[in-house]
Image 1: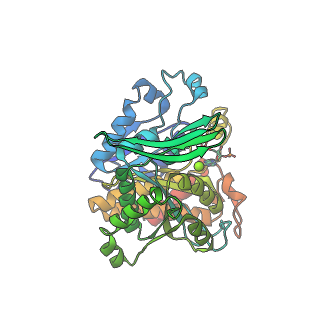
Image 2: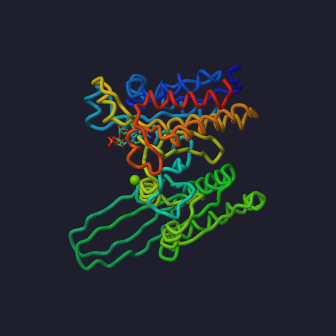
Image 3: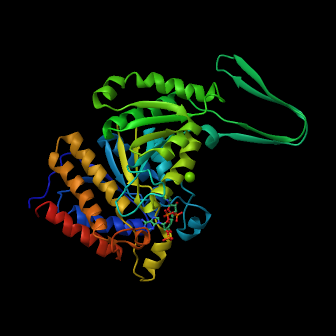
Length: 403
Ligand code: NAP
Ligand code: MG
């Protein structure tokens, strides 16, 4: 077989620990034998981030902006313990946070589903993709603990000097206060990313807030979404997909009774909570994919899970590990499909699809990493290590590609 050609480079962002080991295996076994890979490589592993004072993360985000498609390995977000483990100069910020804010992106998380792993919710037949607004609200709030009765006020001082003042509460005893915000621009970007991603994946969009209670705050979200949707309505109608707005509590009830197969756009806190609920109910964090989509159409693919530190320490001791590479493989296939689509390379799109099919076929054949074996029903599941699992995928991929 002649290797599949690429025209524009893919931004490749390497990472840390066990996922760095998987990254190399995936590239060597599942990509390089079939594709004449064109990538611009950035090492976001913690030692290189430290060496470059995190400049490498900024460079990688800029490269994503330049080329439009990136694929990222999981990376360590340093904490106190990592400072001494890696002798770091500084407690560098989360690379995902840096990239997300530079691209002004929205994160979409969707589970990879297979017949033999049944969602806890019996009615769910198709994936539910959670789109979480990743700016503001309680994540950028200030709180005050008060110790006596008093007047709580909300004050805004405009650049022009205009002052808006509201009494929150005449407090008759000690209590707590919180002040949070969001920005029209960020909400608008979020809405664009959701509608664009819906068109890309041909799925409905559900959006939910609590605008009956937070009339101005959540009301603004509802209003901006409705306004931005007018730009997409015609395209939605052509594709036969819909935009549906409802209250968050109604949405939760409907989600549980639904078949799945839509994008659920959530405010920051709702998305934080609901994405863990949805991913757990679908089976395993190791089967959750994630893509960052910017309002101007930049796509960055990755696994939703972290660097799987516990498995890495075992690996370092020479123990055999059975870490699940599915979500990382799907990050690669997603990026290949998107690159192929943008560059008009149907062979590259087909490669991405066949890589996914070969991976799913391997699981359907009962060949699984340890985390899935206990969850599978109706197949004779055989537990294999990561290398054996990837080798089984390679065999099926080669057959599918006629290589
Ligand atoms: P994690 O790496 O997601 O792993 C948590 C646990 O989930 C693992 O110990 C393992 O359970 C299971 N698991 C996750 N992915 C798996 C896979 N592919 N195959 C099999 N089992 C899997 O989360 P963490 O241990 O909290 O974080 C580790 C590091 O990752 C941290 O330094 C954190 O900063 C970083 N992180 C990075 C990202 C990112 O780059 N997007 C996201 C989250 C966390 P068992 O041990 O029970 O087998
Ligand atoms: Mg959470």
